[in-house]
Image (cartoon, rainbow, N blue to C red; front, top):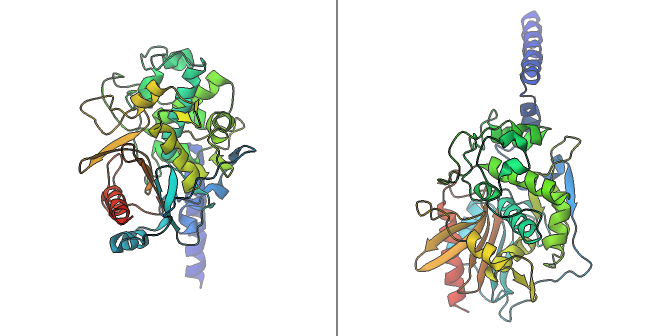
Length: 382
């Protein structure tokens, strides 16, 4: 009994010392991350984690515009393969929009058409849309405007807002979603997000090559907020959420600092059909219901590779060929996708808990191809 008491005593002392050292060394956010992730039975950030964070509301307008229903709505069942992968990879929403009408939709695991789930890095595409809007409205001069105009901390660099949007900034950042000591984890769980970002230096020549870094988009979001004088959630609401006719309010996760800074690199919580509106907006060259919400030239540039050596990325959007078809898409951690084939007028949305096992940072995992191919097999029977 004495031995057990002594063991417990030293175990508690050790835990207290470890916790104290984490806070003293500036890694106290790890405690919060562990509480949110591991203590809820997860191994990484998860799609319905928004209740664990502060959030700003992205308000819908007074005239929501639900998607039209296709005349052949849900007339075709999921293929056997699609049904299996949806189960195996924890899909919660799978939607096919054909000719701007909902052709197929299904929801799983207790989720439904209005359930909010985390966009993760699909928010990067939305943040880049806000950059296009800020340029269109004159808040930011152009893609070539230096970031030092907004943050003098970068006065000795030549990095531009376009470099941030195209993942070519040269920022000192290691993209790691599982390491508790990584800057990505710090950005997600630490209280002062601005301090975390501004501590990152430019260590490579900007504008030369693609390197996927979440810090790029976070810094871009901070610049947009500074340039417009509006919170990202308010700017998103007035620029797109309301004009696009979103049917539900959305949420944008914040850090815990008094500045309440939105996580521009991730973490917009919404539903499949409201996320899909950005696919239609870009498919239609920035026009919605006859109004030009985004400059068409900016849209084209966004879904065109900036670097020949990196054909998978433009400005905030990904590109991938499957067979003889060319898709552009929004992508997020754990397999959040809005996939667009403009020539076929098709948008595929998948939200869920996991990717296929071959997933990797900045890589196209096999699940993307599966979701595309099985959707087209279904549409052949229409």
